[in-house]
Amino acid sequence: RSRRGHQQVLNATHHQNSFPTKPTKMLALKKKREAEAKAKAEAEAAGAATPPSQSSSNPTSEPTESSGKTSLFGIGGKKKSNKSAEGGGGKKKTPGEIRIQKDIAELENEPGTETEFPNPNDLTDFRVYITPQEGYWKGARYEFTFLIPEHYPHSPPKIHCKTQIYHPNIDLEGKVCLNILREKWTPVLDLSQVIFGLIHIFIDPNPKDPLNHEAAELLRRDPDQFARLVSRTLRGGRLDNVQFPRLL
Image (cartoon, rainbow, N blue to C red; front, side, top):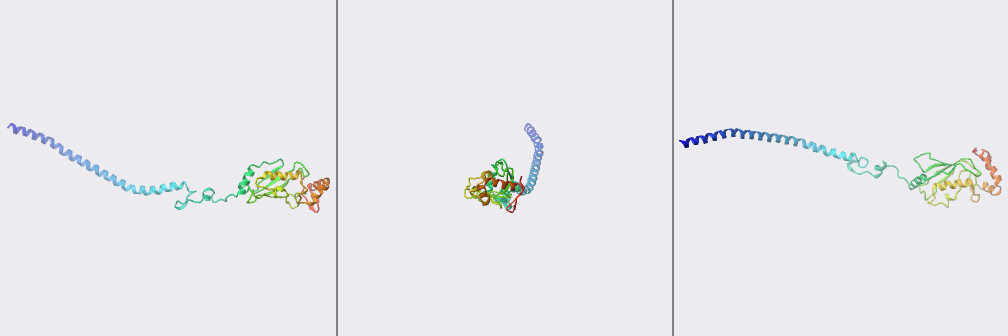
């Protein structure tokens, strides 16, 4: 009887412990399945969202990179030419333009000289105005055009006097006789030296190397008469059927 009672106690104890255990396991299993289902749903949702995100991110990243290089890259990512990248296909400077830019940057106007650029973007065509501070033509203002050739400084600048003048070294058509513009020219010479040469022929004209031979001959033979004729021309007088502008 005691064994039967002991067994009953054990059985009662077993049933008491096992009864609540079964619902607990079922509840845990249910929660696990719900969690798995939720995780699966989230995974499916994430998987469904991933392809559009990737497909949109790649095109987005590529334009982002190319947008910062629009001046360098064209369609298909091909690199454009340096001209397009650097100056939009602008004209390349000639050696003469490079050298003239340097010469002009170093140009120092002598007393009585002015420099003018009709087109600031074209340094190869400009004007120099000279007002001699002494000599026969003192106080008059003369305009010279400067044209820089493509092969400058291997070729000298082309200079023309626009103001009519009675001078041994400048003819009535405005041609200028200056040895550094001819056989004495070398690439080491610059514009400052050319302008100084022009100033010099106003101060000390050279009748031995003339363009206006009549004026040169008169200067050699009779400097006083030459001075009187120059004074007449500066006041707008006529000489040898040529009307000179009034400069004084």
